[in-house]
Structure formats: structure tokens, C-alpha cells
Length: 525
Image (cartoon, rainbow, N blue to C red; front, top):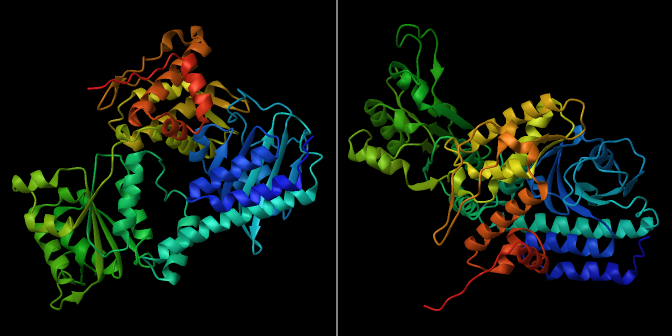
């Protein structure tokens, strides 16, 4: 039985204003809810029309943060979003639980358990959900409805405050009207999100926020498959030109004899086959953004014509005497080293300098420490919908295996590996409520060591041939040991920072580290 006093509710309301950041505010909310209500898992999700996005969670696996839940695919979420009041699901409810297989302290299907959700409304607008689960059946039955309504109101206010603070921060760079449109577009769009919480991804997001509000041309560079097009879309969404078009051009796919026509357009009769007037990509992108992907593949002759358009904001369609003025912002992307290309006379220096007013580097996946698990969760949710799988989960051994690989194909390769693995796992485990992806489903990947400036940690490759003989406790201990050591190295031996990165209590982390024989040796030099 939960005996929630008025004092506990007052403490919940008083604790939240002390928070400085949005993340701290969400974490403090969940901490206080768990102290107020006896439960094993709690999650805060934001509502975006047909999708729920996890913002903060406790008691659930970290890859849940990378998932995007389609409401129509999850009957419990659907019922919560349609309700105006808290909903307690019967312990005998036959509706599938979206968190099946995701609770940290429970391996496999969820048994009979207590589950409830609190829809979070502010000014009659649904902002999100607060979900609370307990492995103890019926534990929520005696909580008064009024108490749950108070907790819902406090949580909704917290969520609305976070949204308002983000909006006010954005208004420092944008007008209020444009920010409202950008915010709505960003919330509605699925797939236009940069998934990742690693330090290098946080730095990339900061760079995007800095340069997006300017009108600078941007050179986006990085290895193949890192997500340069996604970065371009994000930059456009956050720019003053978000109401204008974002026009994509694959420079590598343009026939050399048609480059000028494709970019600048042509008039009827300009050449054989030109049976009507056609607008070029620069004209279509007027008052918006033109994204020139694989810019390094353009021949030198075409580069000079693009340079003239960028310098003078003028284009001349093929076969037309008059020039046309255009207002276009250029994003260019490449996986080549254009600076070296300039030195080798393969790329025009003047065009390079025009395009790289503000270069943005997209990091490779091997540099993004800790992001593989979040990306795996994101891709699992996507491929699960395509395959019609009830729930997809990746086990700890497979995660270790994926983290060993250096990912030459980056995020795109990870997406393909996850998709193939999900297909294989679904084929092996037909009619199961929770489909578990194992090492053997991932195919043959080449292991690599995880490097640090101060220390090198090598995670042993799982023995996939004898996977049935693996001891689960030993494999789990090895995974936890390697993960804790790696984060400790990245945080320079700071236990508190490591605990925050791993989203666990510091005291629990210290106890676990002692059991795993992890120690920090300090020396005076």
C-alpha cells in the first residue's frame, strides 16, 4: 500500500524549482516521484502528435531513451493519450506493455505487475506522459485519485517550464513567430533528430545551435555514413529560412553535360530535348537553402559557375540572356579532404573558401562513446514497426560485440546491421512477445580496441561458436567492468561524474566497482 502524505507532495513541489537545468529538473522529478510512490520504473515522455519521445527514465534500460514510440502501435500509450485523468491498468490487462523486456531488474517478459500512467496537460494541451510501473501487483490501487491528479499537475508544470525555458533561449536568436514554427516543426518531424549523448555529439549540437541562426554558408564534412544530410536538415530547421525550401542536390549523380541546366535551369529550345522551360535548383531554393551533397565530385568547370552564383547571388538559365537574382544559403557536404583537393588543384580554392565560411565536422561513430546503445534502441523501434514485431531487445553480449567494432560505415552501417539482426532474430523466435537479438544475429564483425589518451581497454570478443556455454553472470560482469573502466578513464577517475554518465547512484557504483575489483591508483609525479 502507498501512504502518500501531503508533506511528500509539498516536498515534491518545493524540490523542482531548485533545479538549474532541464535535465536536472527531469531527474529531480523522477527521483521525488520514486520516493513518493513505491515503484520499480518511472519514465517521462513528451508528446509529438503520433509519437512519444522519452525525456528521462529510471529503472528502464538506457536504450529506451533512443526509442520513439508510435502511439498507435502501443495500446496502453494510446489509452493514456486519450485520457484526461490518470489511468491504472488492471493487473490482468491483456494490453501489451511497451516496456516489456526493458526493465533493468527484470529479464524477459513482464509478469503480472502494477502499471499506471499520468497524462500531463497544461492549458488543456497534452504535453506528455508520466508512466509508473511496479513488479508488485495492485500496489497502486489504494492511492487516491486526487493525489495522482496533484502529481500530474506538478509534473505537467515541470514539463511546460522546461519547454518554455527552451523556447525563451531560442528567442534570443530568432523572432518569436519563427521560433514557434521551428519548435512545432521539430516536434512533429520524426527522423529529423540527432540521436546521441556523447561529449562529441553534444559539441556538434552546440556548433549547430551557434551557426544555424546566421546566414553563413556551411561546409559539412565527415566520413561516409555519419549523417551529414541529417545535420543539414537540422541546420535548416533551426535557421531563419526554415519556412523556405531545403533543396537537395547529389552532385555525384549529375551528368556533366546537364550540370548547368540542373542547377540554373533552362528555357525551351536551349538544347536538344529542352521542350519546355525548366527551373533550376537555385531558383527552386530561392529564400531557402540549397544542399549540395558530395560537392567534391563536381568538375572544375561546374565549380566556376557555382562560384559566380554564390558571389553575385545571380544565375543565368541556359539559353536565356537575362540574369535572375536569387537569395540562397548554401550547405555543402563532402567526405573528401577539400583542403588537400585544393592543394592538388582538384578543387577551386576560391569556391572552397566561399563554402567553408563555417565548417562543421560530423564525428565518426567510433568517436561517439556510449551512443551505440541509444542508436540501437532508435533503430530497433523503427525496424520493429516495419517487421510488425511486438518488442525487440538487444542483449548485453550483443551490445558488447557491437561496441568492439570500429564501424567504418558509421551510423548507416549500424542501422543496416541492426535491421539484418532484427530480421534474423524474428525468424528464429517466431510468435514470441519479446524478440531478443543475440551476437549470432549481428553477423561477423571485426573487433577493435577502445582507445583512451591515458589507457587502452580491450573488450574480449564473445565466443559466438560456444555461445550456449557462456555464463551469463560472468559475461554481465565483464561488460559492466569494461564499461565502468572506460567511463572512469574518460572522466579522469571522477566517481561522481562516472555515476552521472551511467545514470546510477554513486554509492551503488562504488559497491559494484569493489565487487568487480575496479580500483583507481593515484600517484604523485
